[in-house]
Picture (cartoon, one colour):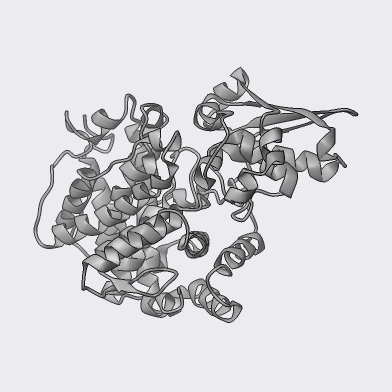
Length: 455
């Protein structure tokens, strides 16, 4: 099975990675890459003290002596390999990191921590960092889009399985690997991907392990390739390769067509709600209703939601969530939090709020149904319709897609505000402003200058 361009897929990708230069990138791609970096840093800072993040940080810091790259949020230095892992975990703990509708994945949380760690270790410029992150996103998103939704339906978490490819591509760029070395880095990355969506059903604390491991795998793959290690020639197309093993249906054309001329990073979505993306259209609809109408909570008799199958399967359980992370994958509880607190951000998903008897009572009033038309529209649309029944009548709203998608984007000001609100949980405003200034002008700064401000 050979790609339409008559070459091995790794050859196509290696040529693209090798050729990308900052000066030739479209301005909108550079700007979008900065938006992704800003979003990741804010989310990682806010997530640095939560859930799995402190546990893995302690284990990693206690186990090694290298001091190559910074742990975001506390300033300790570890090896680039382990910094990528820890920062990947920190970036996914809140479930507020960026994503891509067709890829069914979160690219930034695997690619950016790997890129930052390797770039700090190698002391490269911000221009080189932009190049690396851009190629990392492109490789990640093309592979993930080509294998989904089949990959997701088989039970895989794309962020963990495809993340090593994107992280390896980015790190290969930073290390200035040859085309042969890049091919080997991608092949070695393909041997390391792992991530099962069962973690979204229970044990949600461990979900950030997937992007953390993906970031670490990308660093390791690029370092091994630099030392001369090789991987399978047909990591993608082989009879026992990635595509056949991980998907029932793969679109090779989407992996290579127009590579280098169009950039999938422009189709990234950003999140303002601290919950699974499949919950967002319902949250947007319920908040739209509440913002436009004066509805008292005690007037609500029931909330009915129509949405697509994957949203229902991953988040539609009506069991009482007993942890913050479980609540982020629980549509009824998330709806109740939005109704009571007027939003569903980081602070709303506290254990105190989740166990609030009013939240539990409202969650039990939520019913969810799979909508055939929404199923047929997926993944072009990730929609939901919400109807609130009250003692005074019915209120309804339907969303084709959640806010933050390319069709309904957040402004720079909205993303800046999200960054500030998240960063304030760790940093003083003076440092936040300086970090933001350096990041938004990263092409004129070194990565080490940036990371000195990230704690």
